[in-house]
Image 1 (cartoon, rainbow, N blue to C red):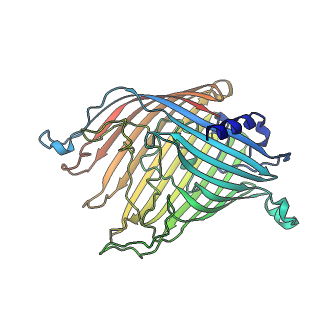
Image 2 (image 1 turned 45 degrees about the horizontal axis):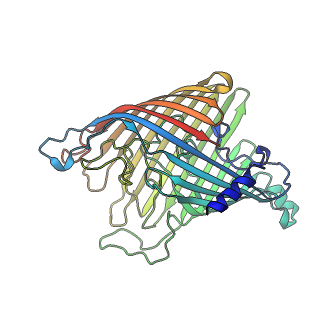
Image 3 (image 1 turned 90 degrees about the horizontal axis):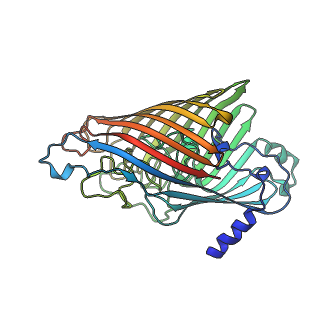
Length: 427
């Protein structure tokens, strides 16, 4: 394996950026959504190595309203210090004219300390081997992806941190309700002028499973492993200094048994240990979702997301409105979850190498077994500096509150606040 990586790295040194048909891993990849079409001429088989590395320092405090006599729901003694660093590696192979292989690897993360494959897919932008003028014309605005990939539901997943790859996120952490999943399937993206359209069909699972679905007694499941269908339609246009992008997306599956739309991140939260129970440590692989919320829609889910992105010179506004319904495999009742998030970022300086920003994020949901809804609110303020296009340093202050949990739950009146500093490399 080491010899293979050394060989690939040596070959990668001959690659120039003009042949990159995938999203850049450095600063130039910010505010890139669906990968733009590339019309560079293909010369020969090429391999490119990319990746990201992020190290963070955390100074947080947390508390809840659980009585001291309730020993089972007390919080861990949280201190200050450096968190486990994360690292990603991308291997991109330009196989022939318009055909690219992308292999994405988590080298180390909070949730998985060892190397894990995130996914891999073939991206097709041209089909000269088909010898069809009609297909050549269609592929001028069409991209096809086949394999295991990050499903194109909503626009928020283009701005999130993914393990060691954190350049696209102006903040330290992702949304409270983090819609992200890698699934096996096929996706068609169409970029026709200012029109954005995407359609996908996947297996609906992170880990493919062919065994018959075992349905617990009393479950509302249809007993099948149904595919997931994902669609997006939007408008993205540059009006002189103003960029306007508005999209709507849907993700739906009638049955899966192990769907992970809201629990598919294998790298973990960037807030370590917050509101976790006494006796746990931040160096352990679990728990890894501190500060996040998953409604537990493991079997059936239908979700809608709308996104608005405005950029006028160095000023950016990005907002998300999301609503979803679903249930777990063992449940018969469908529950509802909603999320709203909005952020304002000002980029300034030479080549917009500095930025300051603020984000508000709120989630309302009824967890399984609860009689009523819970609410989670987060306010984040962030600032960053790109010394070069491959280096980033960012600082975030966050304040998060959990409301309407019962007093027998660890998150009853739970809240945390403090600082996170991250230093990152992206290429």
